[in-house]
Image (cartoon, rainbow, N blue to C red):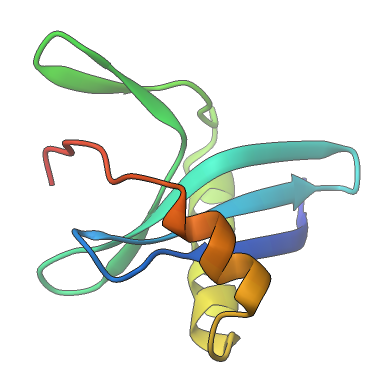
Length: 103
């Protein structure tokens, strides 16, 4: 599978989540509500997750380390190439709230 589209929705700069994104694979599968998180050393990609007790569990995950790495690299690259957020992106992201993430 390969990433055929990435849509970035920057947040308003609050918290560690710096953007949400949707990822399309092979023009047939869309994964929404992925996150781009600013870690201590670098940005990283996170699949959609839900909180269970004290930990977060990915709702979507790959069985292949290589595919996860490929998706993450494509998303971070798309984020780095994107300019200032559009008015539509600002409106969408202002409706989102950062979750209480463990990272």
